[in-house]
Every structure is written in C-alpha cells, then in structure tokens.
Length: 507
Image (cartoon, rainbow, N blue to C red):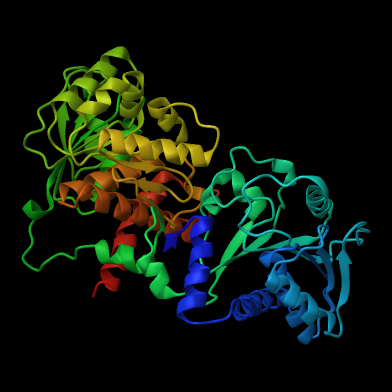
C-alpha cells in the first residue's frame, strides 16, 4: 500500500474527480458516508452526545456532511463551524447550506465569539477543523479550540488527520496545538506521520476508510514510501521443491557472543536455523562453545583464538552469508576484529548490535561493506552511524541518506520497522507488537535475515520478508502467551509456525 505525501493525496483527489468522473461535492459525500458509518458503527447508540467541530476548508465540509448523515440515522449532533474570515471552500459552503436544512442538528457558525459547549466523558467529539493540508503550526483562535478539545474528557475522533498534525514532517510543529485523537479515520491511505512513535499521542488508534479514490491513479503515481501488504510479502516467499537438499539452502556463518553473552549467539543461531538455512556455523570464543553446542545442536561451531571474545577475523569464502554482531561486546580488540572482518569479507553480511557500534566508532569503514549487505540498527544505533536525530521523521531521512551513501539496505527497527533501500525507497512493516520489545528480539531477527541471505534471497527481499516473518512470529507468541511475559525465545519458538502460514498461502 503506497503512502503519499499530503500534496500527492490532493492530486489523487483531483485525478479521481477528472477520470471517474465525479463532482468534488459528490466525492466529499462518499467520504462522509464512510466516516458516518465508521463513527456510528463504533458508537451505535443514537443517544450518544456528539459535538462536531468543523473548519472552513474541505475537512470542515466533510465534518458538516457527517453531521447531516448522522442526523439521518437518528443522532442529534451539535455542530460548530469556525468561519472567522467569512470565507469557506466551495464544498464546505454547499454542505453548510445542506446542514441548515437538516432537522435534528444544533448548528452554530462561529465568526467572532465562541462559547464552548460542556463536554463530558459521555461525549464523542468529531474533529474536522483541518485535514492534511497544513504546512505550519496552528495558532491563535484555532490553537485555543484545539487546547479546549484536548482538555475535555470526551472521546475524540479525527477526520483524516488530527487537526494541527502535518502529514510528514512535524519537526517544527507545536505539540500543544495538535488534537490528541483517540481514533483517526484516514481517508483511503495512511499518512507517513502515523508511523512515527512521537505522533501516537495525537493519532491514537487509526483506521483506513475506502472512499473510492482512483486505483488507476494510485497505481500510476510513484511513491518512495509503502506500507506492507500481506499478499505482496507472501509472494516473496519461495516454497521448497520436492528434490531439494540442504546444499540448496546455503551455508551461513554467524559471528556472535562473548563471555557473559552466549545467549545472544544462541538466540540468533536458533532464529537462523528456524528460517530455512541449510547449514549454520557459529564462530564463538571457547568459553561459549559448550553452551552453543548444547543449546543449538543443529549448528556447528568454529572457535576463536580468544577464550572470551571475538579477536581476529575469520575466512568467509566458503559461506553464502555472514551475520556479525549479537553479543560481541565492545572491547577495543573486538571492535578492531569487526572492522577488519568487514574490510576483508566479500560475502553479503547482516550487521547488528556491537558490530554496528564498531562502525559507529569508525564511520569511514562504511565504505567497506560488502555488496548486498543489511544493517539492522535500532534508533540509538542509527544515531551512532548517522548523527543525532530530533524525531522519527529526521531519523528516517538520515537512514535513507546512509543507505544511499553506503549502498546497503537498512532495517530501522521499531514499531512499523522500516526497510530502507539504496535507492531511497522505504517499506514499512505491519506485523509485530510491543511484546517484542524485549532483550534478544533483535538477535533473533539477525538470524532470520542471515538465513534468507544464505538461501539466495537478494538483500531487499530478505529484509522485507525477514522483518515480516519475525513480526508474525511475535504476533503468534503474543496470542499464545500475552505481550507482557513473552521473551525472545518465544519468538523463535513461533518461527516455524509463521513460516508454515506462508507455505499454506503459497499452495
């Protein structure tokens, strides 16, 4: 599913109006029907007190039409249309006249003074002040209305975008002047801002409403941003042929673990073996050897010269992919070995955890990354690689810049994990849940990605499929155990079932 900038959504509206063809007021009516159905479906009791705040533009026009349609369902909404300049958009003006002729609606047009209604916990407030067209923070009277809404105990529903929130970059926005919605009903497509952690307080739960925007127009319009589609991800999976053998699925090398951190190598190794790799060798210091062999008997081990840490690079010529980083530690000796391993390796690598920290300490080594490699930073690790970020939007832009400069794929971990390609395309994952915010979850992901690279998936496909299946396994673990008590090992235990679901979809 493509994610367009707000300017692109306006162009898509215009394309639909021209090519369907449909009058703009009729397209607004179609959107209002979808909105009214969603709101009344959520609050089916027509005695629910509803207060609707409408602005002077088309978002306000949507809100006025919603009020009229809800009145037709037996609700008695109270509507405040804010028109301080005495200037409404054409479609907003048309819906004002339609609303005035509707029975069962208490209508106020605010030109000068606003006497606010009393809002209680029983109220539902519909925010239709401003949609996705804002390019600067709200101020003045509209900011005061937003603060009043936010201070109320009512449940708040935002039409398309919470008023005051910009669709992409909110770096210079004013947090106190943005509606804090409990539910955002986005028209047709999501907004990029919905996928950023700091905006959750404004967006709340969000849902997409199909308003019939032109599929042809969507398909014909390019976008650098995309939200995962289950069917598309499923199509990336390659089922096994009947006469396949372990040699068809690659030999992977995992360089992981140090004294006191054997668990990271074990979790990553199990993630790899549960994701279809043919053979796996784990490079470990001697102190971890027996724990790895006892915990992951399907893996082979290769011993480092050091008793306690990764100390010298190893030969990687006989492997199809190399994973490095989980549990390595940050001693100078290990950091030096990591950088030398990267410099000499010609095999695609998955670089995680302490290997990323070594790169962050010597960013010039980024130019040595093998072709087809994947970096898997969490936000703090990305900052070590690319610099400080003020928010998620800035972080995503820095990840894009780094992926292009280093010619690698970056898996920026978090809710809606982003896979960023060297050409700047960003693909957001929808599987996963907060229960996966636990130690070792990233180590499991490294193993999954390593297995896919070793099997011959290209880096972009491996990254997209890997984060999807990792999140799906996390969702299955949460269904079984709940989010609070699940561990990274539970994610690994659910990987075979997650892959089974993909196998069944591909039959």
